[in-house]
Length: 261
Image (cartoon, rainbow, N blue to C red):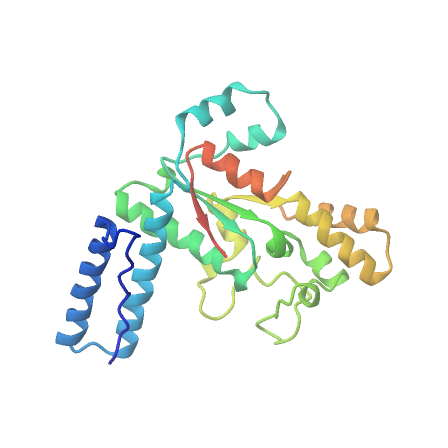
């Protein structure tokens, strides 16, 4: 099999930095492993997928994404108390992440939340009580925060291009709340994650924006549709002023930021 190696990029002086040299050395070791072992295409693809994921995580760490800054935390704790800061104070766990769910992505972020609970507990050798997961639903992921009544009344499957895996048609129910589709475990369903302790926030800006689009398409008053959507936010999900501020606020409470699609 052929695997394309990353090209070594150089700076303006023609010299490689230490990080680049390390990456190339790692690539050479990997290439040698592929050549010398009886590695199937599927196995190699799996390995490359893991490498790309780890490379992205390393890059995020290198630029400080998700870093918990003591100064920011202290400022947040000493500032005015609001509904939002009280929500931030509910974020628990010694090892914790905030998953930024911008797209529905067929519920993939829900699977990642479950995987983090499982693997972080194993990796750090700590009980689940020491693991914290914050899931922020914003932008095109906002319908996942709403109940079946809103999905049916406002044709959310059609509006957000989400297919019901049971019918193969645009969903008229929330297909991620009680169950999950093929390729996912039942324990990855949103309700089960909330019951397990995942701290979920829904972006009010997304509710405002997309309810206006639904209202225009259906010839309804925006304020009525928006009120409906706010009422339809599922049990255990908290309203956030915006998904952006929810992600930023979670970082000040020690969460590592992870883009979840």
